[in-house]
Image (tube, rainbow, N blue to C red; front, side, top):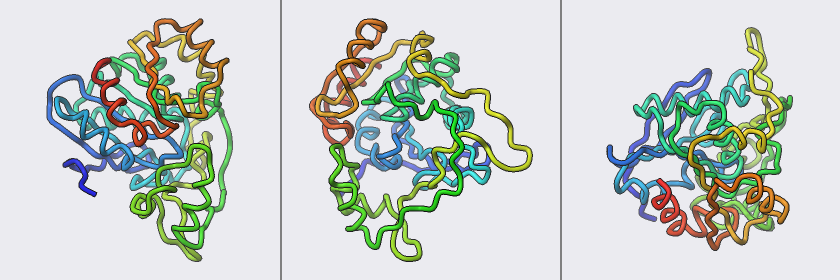
Amino acid sequence: MSLPDHRTERVASGDVSLFCRAFGRTGKTPIVVLHGTNYFDSYDWIGVAGALAADREVVAFDHRGFGQSSWSLSKDYSLDALLGDVIAVSDRFGFQTPVVMGHSMSGRLGIIFAANRPDRLSKLIVVDSGLDRGAPGAYTLSVGNPPTVFESAEAAMAHFAVRKNPPRFALDRERAGHALRPVDGGVMLTRDPDYTNRIPQGDGAKEPALREVDVWAELAKVRCPATVVRGLRSDRWTPEILDRLATEFPQVRIVEVDAQHDVAHGAPGALVDAVRAFA
């Protein structure tokens, strides 16, 4: 498969090294892309990022603990750390107020970022994010989790393929090669099993400022222009969520595309069109 040209860099942030993919050249307002937890890293956004980079810079990076980014030694996957990573990446590429686009869990992360760091973005794009789901707002201790080990890539693919909205690697053997890494006894996902931990560990670990954050309350604080791209065949949208979004947040534009949860794979052209029309 031919992939759009891009360069890769590493950015230091706290106790991790973040792996970044950078596309395009200086032009319109740059975009920072945040991947979700079940679409495991920036690799899944290469096609969309490359298309968006025709007239601007676009950077997609692997969250701490995911893909080719390092795992946090202090198990710091707190909201403070995650928001700090967005700023570290933006600073590295000289972006003061980029467009921030987050998918799934990172859609909620993007909302929290916009609510708490309004000085560091110009617009917000939320891609198919279940707004009623707690993570990443929940303040949870979750360390010492063993990895789920599959005997082969095919076994891992089969395990996830039965989901209603399966991750892309479950359907694509080439993608699976990037989403899995060898360990004793087989393969595991390229993410820290403790990635849901929000309470940093170890000597000198600081108590995060952001704890038990409610996404709806954070969305009410967002003042920058915001749009939601919704997959019509996704399982993330209940009538109650859609009604609340339309009733309480009429300023948030909703764009519907014919896709399951993995909008970047199911409707990349429609997603690119939606982003270009908004930003």
